[in-house]
Length: 323
Length: 291
Figure 1 (cartoon, chains in turn purple, orange):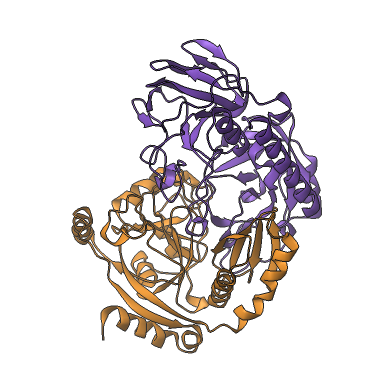
Figure 2 (tube, each protein chain N blue to C red; figure 1 turned 90 degrees about the vertical axis):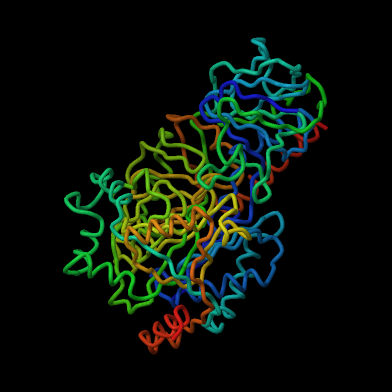
C-alpha cells in the first residue's frame, strides 16, 4: 500500500515520536512538533499512537491513494477534502483506492497531522522515521515530501470512518497564546528589570519560526548585569562558553529576540538561555502562526509538574475516548 | 571552579563546572558525565557532555526533579577525584586553508562580519596579534587540539587547542550568523575551532575546509560504516595543512571510498600536560607519526 504525492504543500514531513538518545552528538529528537495531535490522529485511524504520520505546515499536500484506507487529520484547522468533498477535522474518514486527499486554506493553528491506517512505512534511521533534513535522516531519503514521491504505508484498513475526538479534547493555543516558563539556566545574567519585562511584555511570533526554533519579537530588549566575560565565551554579554541547550530553552542572542528551541533543536551553542518552556506546553508552540501574540507566564517547578500531570490526564482521556 | 546546577524546564538539569573554558573544567565535566552514565540512574534518558558543562535529560514521572538533583550532586566528588587521564586516539585531519569555497561564502556574507574589508583569516590574524595570515595559520595547526564537545548539529566537533592560555586564539562569531556554510568548513568562534559536519547556517569565522567526511547518514564511507558520526569528546586532532593538489587527491580517494584517516592510539594526562606542554605535545606527535 502506498500513496503518491501530487503536491507536497509548503513543507510536509514524515514524523513519529522521534529518535531520543543521540542529542549528545548533535542529533535532535525530532518527531511531531505537536505530539498530542499526532497521537490523536493515529488513535482515530486505529494505529499505535506513535506510528509515523505526516506533519503539514500552513498548507496541506495533495495525495493520491493506491488502496482503501482510513485517514484522520488533527492539529491545525486545515480542512481536508476527499475528491473535493469536505471531511470533518479530528474525525476518521475513509479514502478509496484512486481517490485524492487535498486541503483547503488554513483557518487556525499552524501544523496539521495526517494519520493513515497502517502508518507510514519508510525506512527507519536510528530507530525513527522522523524527518531531520539537516542531518539527512528519516523521511523520504532524509528530506521532506516532494512531487512524485510514492510513500509506502502499512497494510491495515483501519477502524473505519466517523470516530471522533470530543470537542473538549481538541487542544489548540488560545490568543494571546500563553507559554509557561520555568526561569533558570543563565537567568542570573540579566537584570531584575529585564526579567520582569520578559514576563510583562506581549511578544509576537516572528516569521523565522520552524522545527528548530521559534523566534519572537516585540518585547523590550534584555539588559545584562555588568560583568567581565569569562575566558572562551566571546565578547557579547549574551555569549557563554558553548554548552548544551535543553529542548524548550529560551535564548536571546544579542539580547533582542528570544528563540525557543523545539524538536529539531541544535544541541548546544554559545548563547545564554534564561529558562525553558515547560514540557506540558511544548506541543502548543508548534501550533503558533507567525504574528500570533504570545505571553510568557512564569511558573515554578511545582506548577510545571502539576501542568505535566494535567497533560498526562488529558492524554489518558483521549485514549479512553478512542478505545 | 564552582559547580552550578540549574533546572532547564521540568525535564533537564544543566551542570556548569566553570563559567570559563579550561581543560580542567572540561575534564571534570567529562568525568562527571561519565559517572552519571555509569550510575544508570532510573529516569535518566540522555547525558550530553559539553566544553565546561553537561546536561542530563530525565523523565520527571520516574524520578522527581529534586531527587535527580541530589543524585547528581552526590556524584560530584567522584568527578573531582577521578584520574585526569584519557586513553583516546589522535587523528590527522587535512585542512586546505584559504580555499576557494569558504572564500566565496565569506565574501557573500561580508556585511554580517566585523570587518567587511578583509577575509575572516585577515581579521583573526590581526586581532590575535599575528603579522601575517601565514603565521596565524601556522599557529592554528602547529599543536594538537582536544575535542571538547560534539553537538550543535549532526556530529559537529568543537575543539580546544593544547597550548597555554596566553597562546589561545580567540575570535568573536559573525555579527549576524550566515545562512550558509560549506560542508566540512573548519571554523572558529570564541576559543574553539570546529568542523561543520554538514552544510548549513553558522556563525563561526571560516579558515579553510577539510576533504575528510565526518558525518555520513548513509553509512557508506569506509570509516563511518559502524556509526554515522566520526568524533567523540576526548578525541585529539592534529590539523595537517594541504594545498589544492593534495585536497583534490584526497577528495578523489574519498569519492572512490578508499580514503582512510590516519588514526593512532594515544593517552593524555592533564597533570603531565600542565607540567610540560611542549613535551606532552611532542609525545602526541610521536604517537601519530612514529618517532
